Image 1 (cartoon, rainbow, N blue to C red):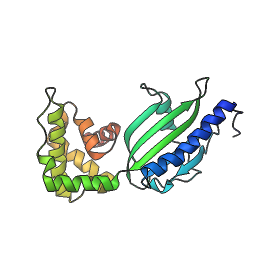
Image 2: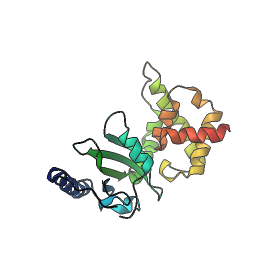
Image 3: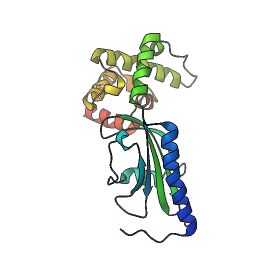
Image 4: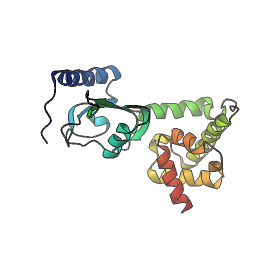
Length: 217
């Protein structure tokens, strides 16, 4: 698809975003993929990318329509920051997506960052086991959310030890088994349990709900 003709101002914005790809990728290092989408092009929309081996995508890859629609309709503005994701190669990512609009308010570009957290999660789990961090959670907050997080840490750590796996090495079947075990223990009867577990497993809440449907089905 031929891109619409842009104003000088819009071209300057795109040039600046292109520079941001280089600057951000060099600042955060080789574990951070930075992708610039030109949303006026249709598909494929990628015009610049750095450290693409993080996700394994190519410049012919397309932006996920669900992700784009979620970003466009996001209630907190045109930025989704530090949300968990999983790459096509199974890497656990911390992602940020920024939507740029033209002066008419139409989506013009998307700047996306994907930081590979796999090694950091491995170090986190190793240090947690070494220093007993999963067993020495802070006192629960008055609303009970601190207790939920502590319970998630303890129960998930227990299940992971039984499986002989770390969070970063879990397969989909492993995560389903974790949810099944927690369901049997009555963990999900507690308010906030899904959010706490999603954070522990580095997946979205909708993923946990999908696992629950399969377990309860």
